Image (cartoon, rainbow, N blue to C red; front, side):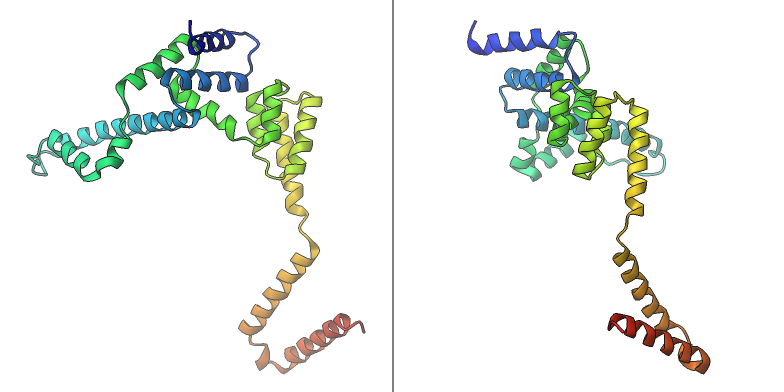
Length: 243
């Protein structure tokens, strides 16, 4: 066997491990697909995305076709054949259209890989596993080491504050928190963050709001209110000047 075949066999054997975590499995499947398809991993990801888009468009076309059949008695049918329409689309889009063509042999290779593995399918892999590769580095490291499950990792990764996310990850691992406990803790942290707005920002916003309200209110027409406003403004000026 050549080196490439040996590598594929090793990947398949590794993917059969019972203790394989989701992150390792994702990397292994992606590497195997790249070898079988003779593509880079980025090209494999693009192919899977194009396959999903093609399947979605096919489903939309079925729905559209059913609707057109129902409307035949109302709207005159276009005599132009579907083949002619397709030919016109290909000609109009030229090379760009050709670049998006999915080869039937590539689809077959992808299907065979997932059939060989015996788990997942191309779309579930694309939708649920590939996003793991976009997680923050600390989360990916935890996944790679097997210290946290991928469902928990994805929940923690949604927390944007790097420092707090790191603390949350450490606590989730050390205390073996459940997914529901992690989500509850995230909600608490987010609520606390919302309350920790800097006082100067609050005051600045209040000053801005008061200025707008002064312009809109009819204070200037009421001598009594105007005197009160002038007194309060004078007090504020004294405070700001250190008086």
